[in-house]
Length: 109
Length: 115
Picture 1 (cartoon, chains in turn cyan, yellow):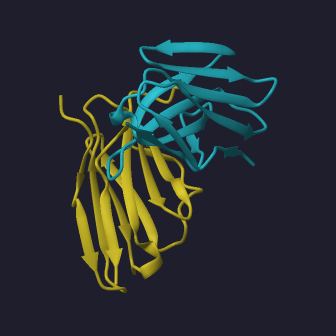
Picture 2 (cartoon, chains in turn orange, yellow; picture 1 turned 90 degrees about the horizontal axis):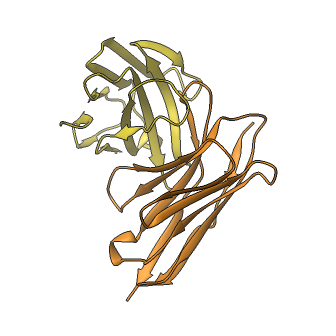
């Protein structure tokens, strides 16, 4: 089967940098996606890594290492509005996503 | 542009009743996904369609659950009969196609409470 592990909670201060890790077990996948979900809201797409390495999108970056079965989401210059849950997900060849349990990020002033 | 539209936003009903959740995907999107989210089980994929055809329904929990997509602009998820353990937020999402990594666009969800 497939499974992903993320820390359940992370706390950081405004303006800081935070890294949310994701380890996974799978027999095969095409890439790792990240989604953000504010409390009571819908998940929204952040990034996708098909290849090993770093993908940068503004203040957010995502990293994948297939050899280590590991990825992370890096958030820089944290803002209060970044307080949300962040989900890593494995992407299969049919577009199907398997989500981790999510990491709740709390940004403090 | 309109996003994924789900209705109703909230539903409270008694156990044993039939519940029908509705979804209108983004125009031009060929793939549609139904998810269920609970604190205990997280975000689970129930079923997904491509070009209106069900591709994988392995996540559908029981025969009480059924989903249809009669055309490219409409899908329903039905629970009959409903049970209290079905209480959850149900999300519909659509994506342009089945390509890996294609972003999925989620609706605002239906918050379902079965009493």
